[in-house]
Length: 388
Image (cartoon, rainbow, N blue to C red):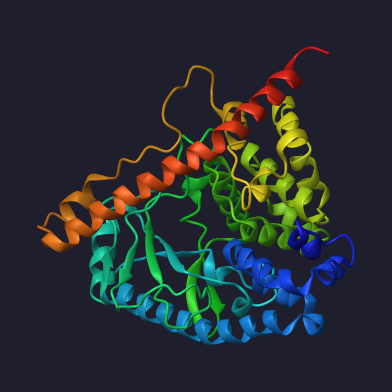
């Protein structure tokens, strides 16, 4: 919560960092790294930032140069394989979404490709040495994550310039079973634009569509219990900077429940200013969602240190009556199976099986830890829904 106070937009709250004892700084920075907000803190603090934070900015600047080069290579490979694509998030979040692109941590490159071009796009990435690092996708919006196998090993450094970037090929902008409607997503592709980013010309979402997509992405992770503070901070940064941009908000349209929830979380956490259109969206939510915010608005932040499952009550608010379908089905389009119908190396199969077992063990422990808080939250939720 100290980091949230330091990043708020409704006052000079960076002085909250001064209250951190010297012997607590290492643990505090480790949590900020995991939440991906260390660079944002350093940028907001400016010259007052402690050396431990400014060192991360300098290290990430080296990494950023390699990220730009990776985008250049992928764009060239896509062109060579005659694949049209859209760049999502990442470098596209420069300026209105953060101070500078080099002040944003990035660990993967997200591309949208129409389903008919996915196999060709896979071939383009494979030509650069990218390989699938999992047997099936853990997300229902993109194909399995792909990385270059360089022999790199994780050593606890989130800003290691040698850390390879992953690539994710998205075949849709939002899963229709999330519990909210992705209004107008079918028009995103036709409204795409070219943008100049760090010396590269890349196809990106129309700015209004980028806001919708950022909201859907944030709410998706909120419902899955995996929302990162950075997701919300960048949205709050945008809302604060665009609060007087009447031209943009006059063009923005088709707001739904997800946009209202995302704006509300950004406002609650970071005290950002909002244009009246965004504000009406954030405060025009159904009564049961309003109750969820009153009880659990900061649960996703507290989950960093104290795991909880309070998002399940928001899911219940959004899920249609009688709809018992899984919130995030894991099925993938058939073209992935056909494109990768090949025998795997025995060692690789064993590594994957071991990885799955380790993951299942981790999830079992996680659910055991979150069960008591879930029961307590359930009682609060039930009690507050009773007629007063």
